[in-house]
Length: 332
Image (cartoon, rainbow, N blue to C red; front, side):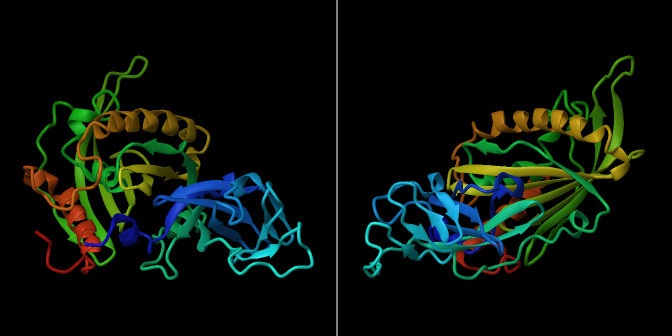
């Protein structure tokens, strides 16, 4: 069994929204690794955050034409992590050990993604609707939860909790039964579709209203979930939750939605307010679950057919930890 860090280092994980990274360096954390990001003329550079000289925090430094300059003694690092300037000894050779680890970075969907391994085990999620101009998007504030990235994705996929946890937002407490549904297992993830009788809360003079909403789940391993909501008489909107593993028991979630451009005047504020309320309901429950780490088996839990989607997702994550194909025989 590979360690958590070793198992998920070869995947792309978001570490910041693109708009967060301006002219100054930016600190980040991923899989127990302290990182610093900065913009170059060709993209984004990312290295370990601690200067090899005296351990100073490079995110407190300054971006220069030569690279990232440490604010403690001026040592400057290029995009490959090698020190290119030691101001205190301008004529002497730069020590061979004067370098920091450098990592791969890319930008897509308004996020900065980092891979800690030399080669990525899989590409980024494919969400073309976010790039073809057909949809508008709105982000939520960053979600820092004391729970594993896998646990976060499981709660997004958990059909059976909707009527219990989300009462007062969209959950329908009168509809507790989960009808049978199918789960698609793919080499890159899992998917499913169900119809849920969502309950719109009472507003002004309007009573609560039930709307049979089609929920389409699409997960890209390891920690990216896409969930489309199609009400009966309204435009579809889609939420995207990418849980970035800070450690095995803590994650930072990048969460945003796409929606029809005709809703631009009203939807963003309404969505952020309602979705933050929904996610707070999830956080309160999820941070009380033990263990916080994503389980490596199903021992100690009792499941029903309603749990099939999160179960199949967990089987895929277990396969990744074991180094097995995720669409092969299901791990027990």
